Image 1 (cartoon, rainbow, N blue to C red):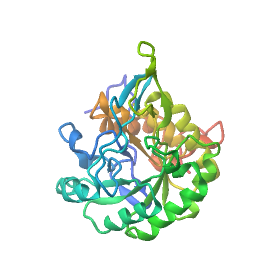
Image 2: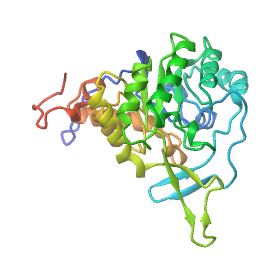
Image 3: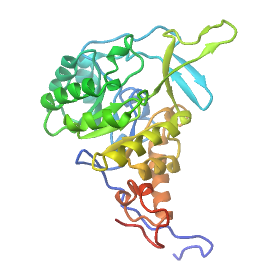
Image 4: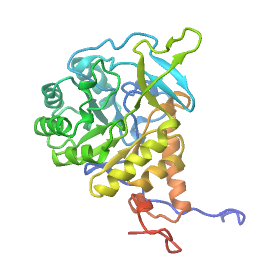
Length: 328
């Protein structure tokens, strides 16, 4: 059947991506904390169709989280103050990861702790576990009682945790350090993590925010502050990805922060991300990860890219690209 003469045929695009050298079937993943351990999304799409399910951050012991209220809407986004509630590593190993593995889905397990030793023990316990693609080291969660636990605010503390995780983790598991934008110089933290053995960087975690109820004249969230996510933070996230890719062009980046459409994802790729995570968008569109992957492929094809990899960091190149298909 011939194409409609009124439409432009978009060429197919090679969407092959990887995470620390491990191949991915899609460059779009979920984002930690927005869909627990994946079961909530199972009714809406095939979990094997996305790059990986990034789990909610798990700690050594089960955790009840912060006081309620825990969520608040904000202009173009939301605040959350969940506080790393979760089943702990025992629950993850006994229930959540076997469920994902039985469906053929792969998990990028987010780990968190209050001490370097916690992170190392978690990494050790995940060695050889079926279905685990790699580890995302959450050194940047804003929803903890002590800001001293936000290791990503300090390059040395970040490097210490990453080095310990890399030493304890399964050699086959890529280790990605998740960074916070709440720093003066994110490049220095990124470089410290890369030098300490991180295979890549997840950027960015939520921004620390606050909302006050004008009627009660008190903070809306029970934990007072929370993490700001959604489209409101996208320009900040893009800036961080841009700066780090510009300084460390060979360090893989998993980009995230307010991605709702394929064009949003394209911006992260052009800024330097080789793959992206989708979080807040799933609250009103649970199938967003697969939709965004399709939209991203179409957007790349419309712009003449034959491969996703050709577009990574393309915005850093010359302002006037030559006509025709883009390539390195």
